[in-house]
Length: 173
Image 1 (cartoon, rainbow, N blue to C red):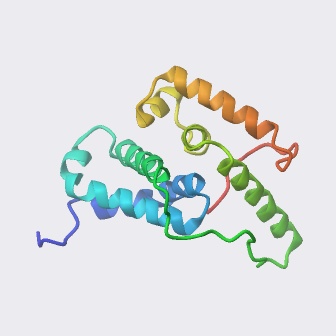
Image 2 (tube, rainbow, N blue to C red):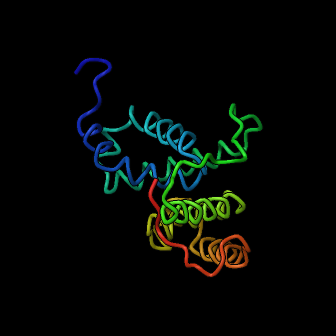
Image 3 (tube, rainbow, N blue to C red):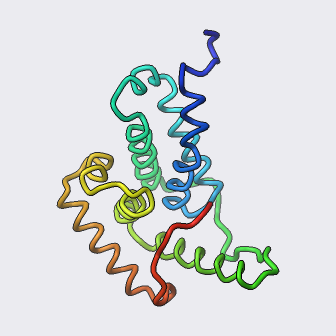
């Protein structure tokens, strides 16, 4: 293996799972560019350890944990290097597509109003469909913490006037 060749199975893992991991990163960060940066940072961190990680029981769970911990540690930094725009440019002529886009944007804005910890719980539990135990392991906390954070986050989302009565569902990146 040359110095810059990917470790065995790494490229296949990235090809197979990067879409799901990118969706989680997008839900955490709120925009695609930051999500791509977050995912790239997490994958760069696991690259040198891939042989050990892939030999374990669940390499995706490990990568997901690195993704979330990278997000949470990055939120503590003051400067982010980019300033998001207040207005998303309108690109769809179709009103149905525009309506779905507006609903997706409202959900993203509501997620961004949650604390990083609550947002991480919501993304892992409801977007990634992890169990309470899996979410607790991924975040390195107790199941009680996951339940409390999820309850508070859902209460906040339910009371958000911008979301309306529509249920929160899956969305595409």
